[in-house]
Length: 367
Ligand code: TLP
Image (cartoon, rainbow, N blue to C red; front, side, top):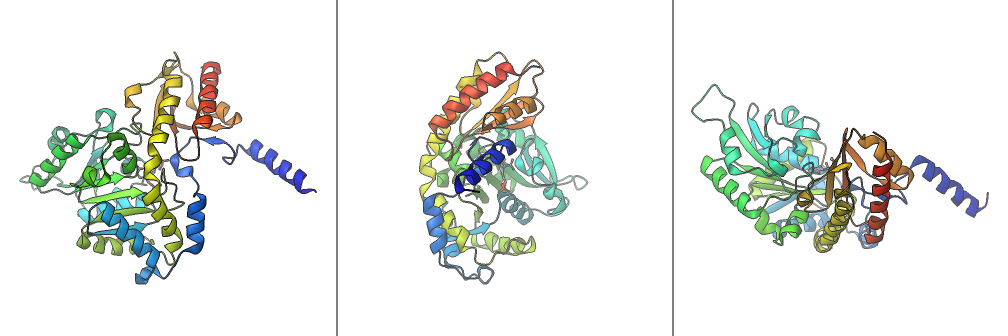
């Protein structure tokens, strides 16, 4: 077989399989691939055994993350889920409650580890657009004098809020939560998987946006394009204890500097371009918002996520299947709900193309 026909065959197979490669992949910003600069840095990374604390590139990444967030320490973890679960375990005792929003990632997508690992129960609150307020949280605090009631151990906030559609919790709302939690003597953890998106949308720095949290988890592997990795930042004492839990969960990586090298570029160079993703999300949202088959609140589209409902019994799965045949990938996140996520690997032209495909396929899909 000639090289040309082998390539042709691979391309056809890929097309038939609906492969993400070559498609306009709006399923998530987790699909971003490392940039050429990241690949070069990974190849050249200086490494050592990080379980011995001897990987210079991991140490550099942790120091930079701590400095950027204005904290004493940071730890590199393989995933955002692991970072969140370590934090929850750190702040709580088995038998306590964790107050969080009803659609929080720690509830829906972290394999019940709040219960299985920390031994706690999520005490959920449905908040409009996923934005929890101190007034709502205060109502759910377990009164400390009731010895026969599970006690509140932790408050958890997600900013941006993924399943509410990438919505942003503003700084003044956070200030109230931080002050209330401090008065109540409760720790607050941030699932900041996309905190750089929140910061870009609000026009504030991540340090200011997170200063009142006891711990912050953020992902390098989503819109910031690193292939793998998240960070947990906090006090020296807290992060010291986090190292034990990371190891317990099997997250003690060895020459992890290969990954941290990409993480450093993600942290230093990629946040600056997130506004582009937000503008592209806006373009997609505006393309479908006015359709009679679509239910969407445009003002809830604040960052790189577009979440919308379908009316008239149109199944999200059917729309997603039709889009895939046209080389556009989207996620059905409910029987009649679709999520689109913009990122580095889909440029403006791709989003324009996706917007047309969306309009046509939503209009054509029968109920
Ligand atoms: N989110 C993924 C899926 O798990 C839903 C996605 O495609 O959006 N916190 C938040 C708010 C997240 O959105 C995610 C991943 C995580 C934590 C977990 O990160 P990883 O995937 O690194 O464990």
